[in-house]
Image (cartoon, rainbow, N blue to C red; front, side):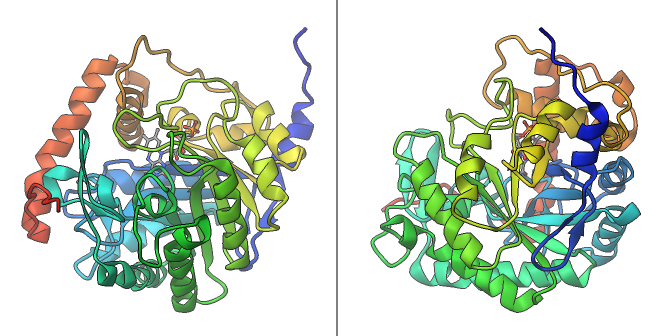
Length: 411
Ligand SMILES: Cc1cc2nc3c(=O)[nH]c(=O)nc-3n(C[C@H](O)[C@H](O)[C@H](O)COP(=O)(O)O)c2cc1C
């Protein structure tokens, strides 16, 4: 039997504003989750296309847009299309991005990223909590003094974000990037006071949160994206992730965004996942029992009914939508005003690892250019275009930041 939904009730649930502990108000419950859009110019600066992309989400009704992978240190980027918060940044363009993302009372926050051991090899010398030299992962271990410098690096980036007009930041501690590596017993084998029990593995993240808060003050939003589990044997598991959630709540974070999976080669990722239904609601329900901090759950939401149920049942406060917002940038407006159908997801036959994410990244470019109606590449074509664009930007990145890739030396 097909359930008859009360779409007006669903819309009411999703339309309710949410005031965060810092006082920033999210005007409804639908957020555009962080997506690395690869639309930076290769020198860490926003492009006109990228500004246009964020305009589409704010005019499309999203309460919050998170700009994926905005780097706090140009030496460890996720991709050469990332933005970078550094002294050479194009502040006028960043301000423009903050401006268009704030249309109609929307919020736009950069996601502060540092890829650590998973930094993009062609323009980086990857380094994380511990050294590895295994298939798919070659990286150095960060020295103790390099780790101790990180909280200030994040705080400087947050201050930069505030100075150009953003009202908040999201600290990326998920998906196997640097702060997630520190949380994970698989990546973090340190024997100093950053490695050991989960409380100790949380130390760096908590120091980052405290330093960022000290820099930006009490009225600026600080979110953290964290894995409910790495979905890797020996990685961060749910019980440890709950401890991290509880500590983050105590540290005065405004919003905890729950995700899972990592980009460790061959591991499952959320952005390639194809199972139906929201992915992390069970964990979000458990997280509720250990913190009062507002929660966002990101992953697997494809319908208004799923989003409304998640909020109405109290499992989450905010619903994070990545691929759904890539398919339809106006989906928030539609769900809030009960018009239009849920987006149709493309089906992919035997996609290679990373293929779906690459397809969606190219879809973001189509949205930015306004030609999404004619966006019909095969998976192979999308992957090829995605890789070719990254390869093209490497020389620009190297010229701008004076970086050359070197093979990591492992002791
Ligand atoms: C093209 C693409 C790029 C992504 N980039 C990021 C990113 O930069 N930071 C991040 O935290 N998550 C990133 N993600 C993951 C999403 O935020 C989200 O966690 C995941 O896609 C599951 O949500 P969904 O089912 O709504 O797509 C990306 C996802 C996609 C599809």
